[in-house]
Image (cartoon, rainbow, N blue to C red):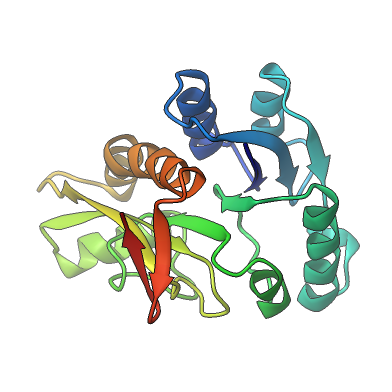
Amino acid sequence: MKKIVVLVSGGGTNLQALIDAQESGKIKNGKITCVISSKPGVYALERAKNHNIPTRVLCRKDYEDIASYSKAMVQVLKEEEADLVVYAGFMTILDESVCNAFPNKMMNVHPALIPSFCGKGFYGLHVHEAALEKGVKLTGATVHFVTEVCDGGPIILQKAVPVENSDTPETLQKRVMEQAEWQILPQAVALFCDDRITVENGKAIVR
């Protein structure tokens, strides 16, 4: 049984999707053993507590720079014996020391079809604002392994979502979460826990 540690910074809707998948038996060979937040008092911590999942707060503001925060995060993840680390609305970009400590064992969900609308500055509503500004007819979500390149790691799963003429960034965000993020993130975690993902030549192969 693989130990899954989930990193959060806010409301935790993607965390809830993972909890629901675990409780319904869709994640068979893994268990969420800890939820770590980058700030105190966020609702994601309540979601974890409601399901008896241990939580920790590693407050970004307590560290003077990303390097010291990343070092502390590596220490905490090792203490938790994490087999898989999942970014679920985790809003702090960690440095390469973290992904080097957990190569191809950290995954993130991004609310666009990478390589579109990704990289530094593309997070939250900014992604959907950019998609609407460009006039794309399809957007979606991507689950990828985390590397030192922001949103640049091997792509595991993607799911497309239609863009409607009447969409606002908020309505598009909601559709992408409901129809893509909440579906493919638990799916990718389940595949990882079943040992069905390998990385070859920088590409994730799902078997």
